[in-house]
Image (cartoon, rainbow, N blue to C red):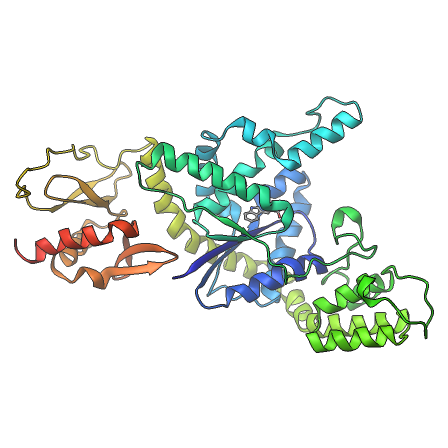
Length: 446
Ligand code: TRP
């Protein structure tokens, strides 16, 4: 069974070494593990919450995309996209907004922190707080629920947002699911092995503390200059150092094997000077980053190439989000797929009702679909839309005559029915055997 992993990075800044070691590198490593279906995206709608400088947004998007790619993300294997290329996300966000209690958002840490700051300086509690900031957790829930992610690797500061996403998902399932859940419950994935890099001053590396080590910007020189500014104690060369309590050592560990860092630690304890230790740290970081930096420079010089990759990723993502949002529109009543939605027929007492059947129709968008109904007229599934009615017809023919199991694919814990290249529908795994049984009655000529 595959696990769908999803995470996003807000495109409002220039990636630094902490972003690389804490988010990008572990995500790329996770994406190549067997059984992982990874969705990584650039959260540019989120960026608008923090940043009203269009140039900064554009620049950051390019830098973050180039960083993912330079660091080795395989965009054939993962789905890599830009949030704003997926119009289904804001649409889902609205549907979720309409089922989210305002009280839930009042409790969000990020919002409360802003209110507290306002109160502390005797301003209006909501001074300077936009609705974007206030309802940010709903947008994040939409990102996650859109693709039914199981695991969401994030920092600890995001745990509450995942709890909220689950709350919102549950509420939607309960209101509209009729016993069939639209959304799986996502979980935060906090990996203790993943390095949270300390910044130059020992606090968490963060742009807002101005204590970052640059990743690619400014080249090796800027990186070396930043490392030189890492704060150490005043012990002289020859004096034993307390490696465990030095953040220089913590950074070193994030870029070396267990043996290498043990060796480094011993040397510090044996009196290696801080100056030498910094040189050694630079070498280690540089051995990992140098080849990437070259790729990064190349990518930054060809924005069109990045754009092409993002467009391909969006197309891949929308294959899922498009049909899913259509189902959600039906669920909430914005669309009715068929003007003649099946009326619930009286269940025949003998069980010898009419035959199960496929019913084809044209939907409101003018596309062709079919429903599969059992003998009682109950809908077992509704197909995705087909542009060509002949193709829809031939898919129905194959479903009627060929072995159903040949069309069933399991992916990310969901059952997909695929005929040839075409996704026909998704089924709840609990319903699979029933659908299989009913469809078999067609082939039997019963
Ligand atoms: N809010 C996240 C952050 O600031 C970024 C983000 C947006 C995200 N949407 C997401 C992370 C969905 C994981 C899943 O770090």
